[in-house]
Length: 212
Image (spheres, rainbow, N blue to C red):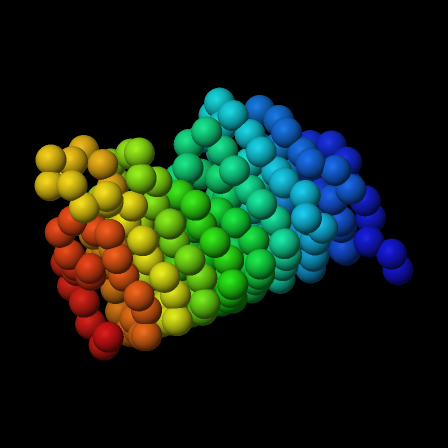
């Protein structure tokens, strides 16, 4: 079967393959995947953009499983919530841009560039390989990459850039304090990454770090 074309914001109605046929722009969540299994979305070089009036994510995925996203440029006025994923299992993202993950179990994010802050909460067995995490250089943030209360996650072969410009006068006003911030992680692996442009630490742990 041919992928179903999508040319406007809205909810993906059910399982299957979908492809963007145009750039999408909207308010709040422009495109949503909710309570669905087995969806593949190919953006085909197109973008999904929102003003994020309700901070819900330009692309929002919730209570779903076996979801794959390929070649998507996702952006929002709030860089933390361009892509919002909650209570989802079996998530695969490849060759895409920008994410805020909560309660995601199992999956991979590969060769993806995040041009905002990346944060994942209660995420288990997620593999991030060959990605770029590029924090905004014109904002202050705690860390370019944050993982909280996770288990069995792997971050490898990636670039983490805190966005700091190296000017001591901009400490605590521009760029990130940390490259990677971990909080109460179990069995996490941080391997073969490049961390740069953070004005305090490359990696910092808060709380309990076990089995790492």
